[in-house]
Length: 451
Ligand SMILES: Cc1ncc(COP(=O)(O)O)c(C=O)c1O
Image (cartoon, helix red, strand yellow):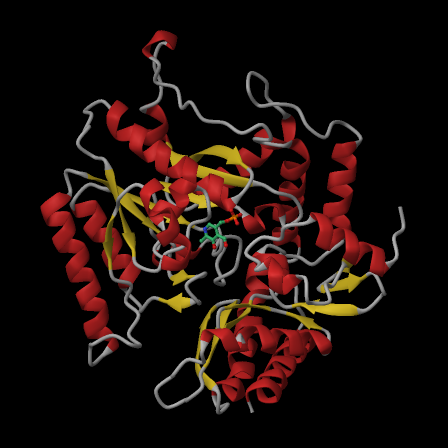
């Protein structure tokens, strides 16, 4: 079926419900239909090329339509596209488990597959909860997680419960489970006089909650080093390390959500490598398959895994699974992506590109209507401000972030905001020239829209 654009628009408006989208608004806009991808570019049905400045929602690693990944998927299609992991095993999922265990931080060794970031988180929280009930010395009093304010872990009810963004949280409050929460060390807008004081307060609250309630607390669930959906809030140096040692001191689990940070985003394969942290559970998704197919994994230690072993009629198994768990096509794509990390020395080459991106962002920081630029590796948040001096935000209804992104689109760059924070999250394969194009278009678009 080769439909004309007007017909596609008609069908789209009649039948589609887009995620995180006010559909009333959507109906008034001219939707862009992406038909193809080539390297770091997306190509629409009219043949216009756009630099993919957010890696197709933070997923793409080595570029689109990459021969090696295409070949791996095609080869696997020639064998089988899906068979279940309930009662059967498959080859790519098995090979990938070995590779993931080899590269995962610390003692992480057992891989439980699913298909999205939210499911990887949901599995992590259920695994952690059940672990405390089934270990050799059970601690059934452990019923709550501790989480950071402003966190985002996905949109299933369990993941939303762990999250701390009111916009997504509030309306479902009756459906959510309770957590202990402590403040994100986000200095701006806080009452503290220095970022250190702000961080120390956060750590103080964390430790004091653990001191009082550790017997009830399952574990810390956290986006390591940077909160993505909160607007790229980068934690101060030392914060993660301190949290880790407090978790160890009070014997609660240290659970990291590397859905956004994993697979090179922060400049390391996993963000936790920065301080050699050894998580008990780690959730990954997005970049796992190179951003090609829906694939996620919840990775844990032998110690946690062992708590689920028992006789059949002890009912200690982890009663959780999704139909497409360990899908062979997605696992084949992931294996090809990991091969590319090695072959193209993706992580090694990233260091220079991260430095270049940092340099290129310097003039953006100076713009009259940019209140802050936050960067962690290849994760960037550019906060727009009506008044630069106190980072006063624009009125929500003005949708300045959206307008900047629409302006960039006119100049051949796809980006997507989080409110008034313009996000840059390019594929790791982006070239220095393309990084220049990306930052120039973003700078010019901000000037054009905000003045
Ligand atoms: C840290 C983090 N966790 C979980 C998720 C949810 O992932 P998914 O959209 O694949 O369910 C996201 C998505 O952006 C994320 O950034």
